[in-house]
Length: 620
Image (tube, rainbow, N blue to C red; front, side, top):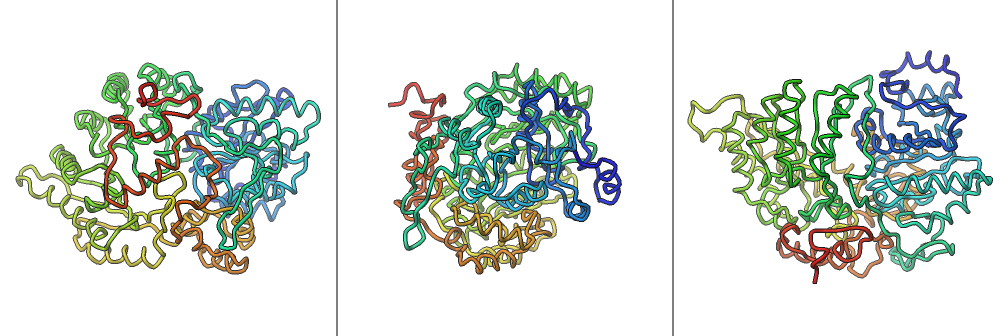
């Protein structure tokens, strides 16, 4: 255990000491002597971001519900705290016990964003844990990882001992049971990993080797341990009504990104947007019933006192009982001034009678995500939104009193022309016109339209996994052209940093050769790369040059259909054949309807273990 008095003195010198002290309401403290496994849930970003992550709250509560396990939290310290820790030889610690990381059995990282990878290295180093798995003996914690970025685990293959591919709530307790058995016999990490390598959803990178062609593509991937499986199948929760969900959530001392009760309506999505990795890898759709959600809301409101309930999913408007649930929550909590938020509504699923009722408690701006400015590009990405379906709800919102609107777009989409880019401006101007074309007596408020454009990043397990990303210069040309064209004071425009999106694409579709790049970049001082004011693009380019690794090979190169992709050994349930058929449709600007309407044989309906979809029983 670290010197608490010494730590307390140093915390007075940092910007936000509450990030590092723990002891919040609903956190869990156990007697170390009463537990067999100590698990550190590691979030590779600052406290405010990590504490807003629903997955952390779920797994923290789940693991601590097991008597023999104590799960603590650890976050990436901000630069001021890191400097103090290094200057005063204070190791990184779990914030519940203040024990350093080397006292834990397992350190589990959640991989939410590729640009947090250097923070993983920094946290290991601050915890006095060797960076590479081959350098960590049985006396060092087991390092595991999961989350959406684990669907391409290869850039971290040298660093992480074991990945969980898919949803971890059911498999993680099973893994810990085996760990407990092996620990009681005197832990041999290799034997433990060989035992759990038989589980679906478990990937042990050291059990495989990769051979490359002369052109840098993958020639062969082979198992070098008899326990290693050729294909790793993702795991899913079959019944969300029966799966664990916390009755309490930890209440931070400071403001965090999302400070509210979160109700998860369902997992999966049937829309089939071709840029969206989550929409593919989280299939099939599994909904919670209304009674389950009402009970969870009751318990979380009682245990936290929050004054907002967020109804979340990939597309909350697609929840089949949204009206029933929302009205029941409003009826119950309206007098207590507990508001309801719907953060992920599609324009074609907006129910303004509900939204208007929600706004009676708390008024806010509205956010729309057309994603592309022209109909052709919306067809390419399979957004399945017409201009009428965009402008109609916007017009209704203005009639009901809204005057602040956010519009989200992407630039650099496959097949995009400059006319498509400038279509973003045209659509924003049409939104403005809808506001002022109404009778003068109906125009209330000061119109403000915030337009933002992110840079498209091709991701694994999407129909666009084969396409090239725009170059940095192409992104800048498109963004700045759009910026010049938008001259209306009612419309503000911002765009995501292309250099950051470029590096995100490198690691999203990278392979094993990037592990050394990561380590070298961290040694040069790279950390918090997802924070623009911390991001140092030049350092990254120096590392690529020094190691003779071409980042364009991963970001800016079109893939052949028969190329072995670094993540091909993972079965996410959606077949490669389906993804390629969707890619071909995209190139022809042909759309695919919502699969709730018709089955298109994505693969989920046939072969996902324990899974289901609307068509699984009657598929032909």
